[in-house]
Image (tube, rainbow, N blue to C red; front, side, top):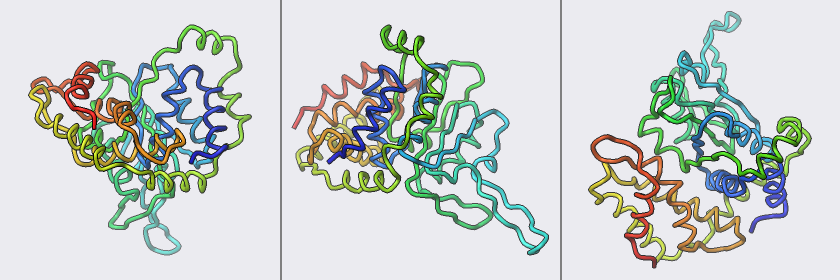
Length: 305
């Protein structure tokens, strides 16, 4: 069950990111489920601050990669440099060798550079010059991106979108939260005063505990029915992959654990489904991302167990 430290983490995060308790919980559930998180929104609403906050409060080694149009894959994974003393090449790890990696404005880099994260996100290792290097544990990527209609952005490849367990949008703060933000202390100064509420070993223990949360067979039937509904919907270009189904169960287990339960409820799956499916599903024909109305229709089309 969630510890007092986990509750302290949520309390501290809500002091820094005002009025976004649900989004913070979604991000934390994604971490506990060993997934990766995509945050999509307009500039200036706190995407980068959320990533900094999670890293600080979980005591994770943190690296930020600012994605730009001239960023190269070697700038992410590292490069081999000839060492005169040993007359051999020595690999110098790039910023991806951290426990929490912030890929800031990921859709401003070219697809080739974006794909450099694929192996790291999927296999938790990177390959360079024929050698394989393991990444630290825990390993978590938070990517932020601006809306696709903004100038200078490159749509993420479908193969990379599927690597992100959840996508969230922060949105503008409500009037009360925004007023508190305007009248309050600088968020960076406030964050610097917070000590970690979790240690990396605590996070790993939570990840292991989430795997033991029970999922009833009828609920697995429900998840399968949701997957099938997306694959047979005429409005969609393609349905959800088996990886998405596994991810939905993993994050539902994490969500249940955070709620103090040892079992998953159908409401957990329903609440998480739009955040898991929204960036994976596209409309047939023009390839536009699905709308919230389409996701709601898919949920209503499948009977609860």
